[in-house]
Length: 261
Image 1 (cartoon, one colour):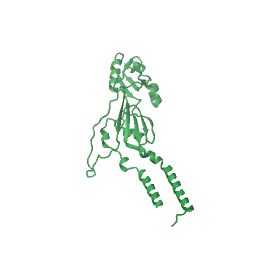
Image 2 (tube, helix red, strand yellow; image 1 turned 30 degrees about the horizontal axis):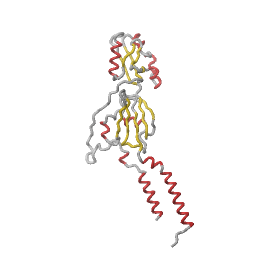
Image 3 (tube, one colour; image 1 turned 90 degrees about the vertical axis):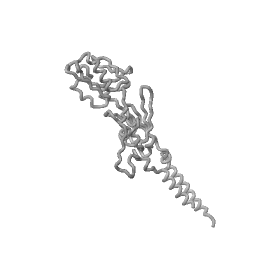
Image 4 (cartoon, one colour; image 1 turned 135 degrees about the vertical axis):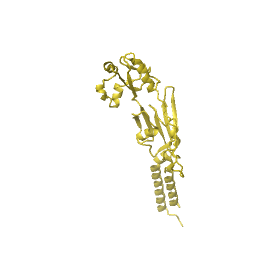
């Protein structure tokens, strides 16, 4: 009877520590079991990023008047290959100061705070036209940082060198979610000028593709919550030792004081 009880307890521990298949599959319910040809469509909702203070911008001014244009740029075109590392972007890039301005040689200060990249480019062109005729301005955001924390393989801060980034791409950069991660509870924390917004995402639901938090913005933080069973799984070795000790004690006691028939 005691051996049966021990086997039942071990079986319950094994069942409780198992992860269900539905808990680890991304983007479910897109195609029904009877129709394998159906295709889901979800709106293309890429949020618009507006420049914030302490952002770093890559700005390059081109013109037929090369001498003046070279003075306006922080580095001459002959050493443009300096933009090859993360540190180079911060050294030679244009930092948005606390007043929301970037300061360009000769051109002066240009207000870029709370503007999109295209709006900032237009503002720089308008101010540059006082010194150059028909200038061409190239502007890019080089401080697209994001963080991934929680139950992922490689939590940390990452840099995106593309204009777009989805939460699935961010998680893949962090090595995917661990077996202890809750794919149904992923939070995106988005700081902004007016405050911080949060989005709770369910990565197992295909409706994620139409969520406002599916596309990330610079400085977003992705947090993957742990499963409730994580603590239980972590304590399984301790429980196994305790049960083993109890079983050994019972066997020793039965050997010393065998039950009477």
